[in-house]
Image (cartoon, rainbow, N blue to C red; front, side):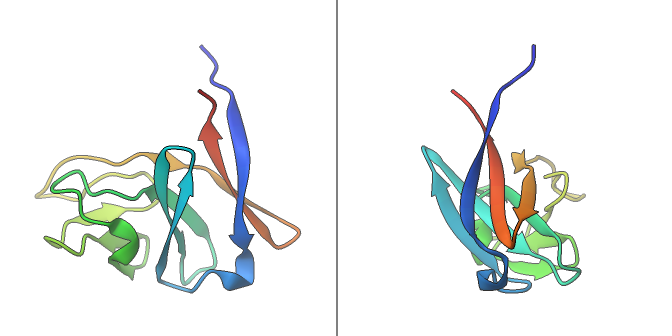
Length: 108
């Protein structure tokens, strides 16, 4: 079954800090958005699967963010928690159009 998505404007590209997270709320979803050092924009669920740490407040290294509560390492591209820990977070597609950043969220 194909799911319909909606593109939501979340800000201008240059306003997103490099290697720091930004929390955005879209409907009932809190999303952590990261502008990586390579310039890519990634968006994931803003809640660590371990104890609910706020991932937008974590330290970013390459394509990973470290949960600020217990240092779990989470890939911001596929949402997978890195071993030896286990779990995953929801990921969201992003796009940039005319310097504006969008996140795709599923329609209800």
